[in-house]
Amino acid sequence: GAVVSQHPSWVICKSGTSVKIECRSLDFQATTMFWYRQFPKQSLMLMATSNEGSKATYEQGVEKDKFLINHASLTLSTLTVTSAHPEDSSFYICSARTRTDTQYFGPGTRLTVL
Amino acid sequence: AQSVSQHNHHVILSEAASLELGCNYSYGGTVNLFWYVQYPGQHLQLLLKYFSGDPLVKGIKGFEAEFIKSKFSFNLRKPSVQWSDTAEYFCAVNGQRDDKIIFGKGTRLHILP
Image 1: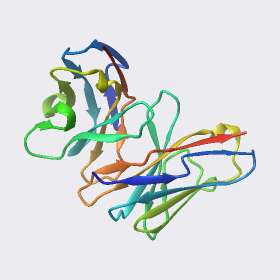
Image 2: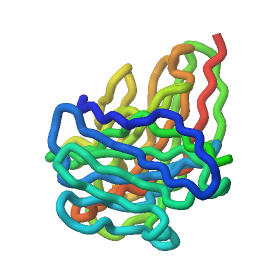
Image 3: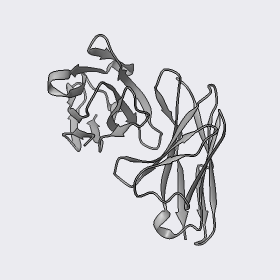
Image 4: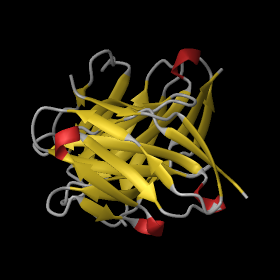
């Protein structure tokens, strides 16, 4: 299947700093990528839909000024958590959609905010 | 409202037992259906998917699922489980005109050796 990578896999930062997470589709082009958040022992919650060359669409309750999404190319989307706080600590997962409408998921990024 | 319901949060089976994980969805319109698996310490992987055609779909590792439209169900089955099937399984749905995938809460499967 298609491969999606995320970088970094684990990041620890101080409260108030910003963290950027990259999501790349390695062997296909993805006009649409998705960002999810997964809490321990819970399902994935969609945060936003990232479309190449346009603004991201955020789900209700997700602060767009806090979670900045940039989909600069057909293989790269970035999520920046601005002014991170401990409650932002979570597992962030991206996915990329292929032309056949199947989503492939990245391995996730574990963010810990001290 | 669009939703996916997985009936069992935690299932424990012995090796060679048969498996069926329930999934029901609520969605207005034509849907695509998915089962994803997350092995311990690994990321989500697609197990199988249904878009159209034969409602009985076969996936990797001997898994299959049956789409029953009248029951809004997409149950996952495997006739004989192995210890390596220990993982968390997520049922998911999206509308055929919708980008967003909605996930169920997951079923944690433990297989006893």
